[in-house]
Length: 358
Ligand SMILES: Cc1cc2nc3c(=O)[nH]c(=O)nc-3n(C[C@H](O)[C@H](O)[C@H](O)COP(=O)(O)OP(=O)(O)OC[C@H]3O[C@@H](n4cnc5c(N)ncnc54)[C@H](O)[C@@H]3O)c2cc1C
Image (tube, rainbow, N blue to C red; front, side, top):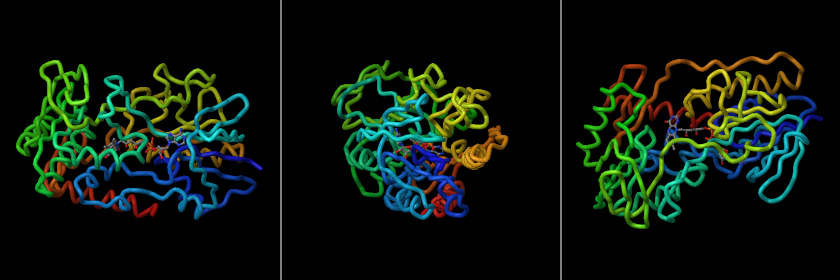
């Protein structure tokens, strides 16, 4: 009997669960280990922040989905991997053996700036609702990070305050222009929209220090009532110095088959891995979702001793970021468009995604 462990209820693993609802694999026991019963969907974080979606709308019940798939669910965090003995250790101390293991545990946030209790992150994703409710309802929240997540969350906090008639200021600080990877025109348009909506926006400013009530940038000090760091992904602490191949930063290094380059029985997908043929590939939900079918196929092929298939990332993908008040900016390659229609498209895509798993 094979024991296949799926660690983390991320985007690729929920697709494996969905597949297991439809097909059964002989002589194989599947186990999902994830830190929380719920997997929160980041595509809908902005809508939840703004008050457009309820908590139940934006999360997948992993226990329920596992049950339907005939998979054992263990609510726990994997704290150690022993690749030589094919064992994992859980935060509760239990050690478990696997024949094949797959990691889809996401990334963490680099918090090198401060140990102040006023500094929050939204990773792992089940911490998001509490962190955001506290920050949103405080009078002067500051968001650090000018990527898509930072822009969406700042503008949705602002939209929530407007909806509820709450006073207060929302500040966004970015060390670069907003969305540094997007066309300059898209960044400029977004920056203009932020100012039009009344966001306190400081771009091209580095955060130097954070204290309980003050955040210091390279140009000014700002009073705050709470800080949210959306400063991009950092690696999870699981893979370093244990003999499994990983990058200098600590991401699990996998081939385009999503198989570890050092241990063929270890698979990985989503933010926690770096693909050796595509080391610069962005870490986002789009690629994590696209890896799902390849991962599932390759787990099955490994069990049957068949040749594995490969993941090839697409060069361009659609991204839509909410700017509050049921408006959004759509970006595809060099094209961008802002308004109500992009928000409707996003709403429909996100709802359809959730419907598959709930
Ligand atoms: C505010 C915000 C908005 C975003 N919007 C978008 C967007 O619109 N589009 C997009 O493509 N990307 C977006 N992203 C990025 C996206 O959220 C991530 O790239 C994506 O979630 C990564 O998916 P994943 O499958 O790798 O892991 P995750 O979705 O992070 O899931 C990891 C899972 O593993 C569990 N876990 C973690 N550690 C362990 C452990 N040691 N043991 C057991 N379980 C563990 C967690 O509880 C969680 O269930 C956004 C990010 C943020 C912060």
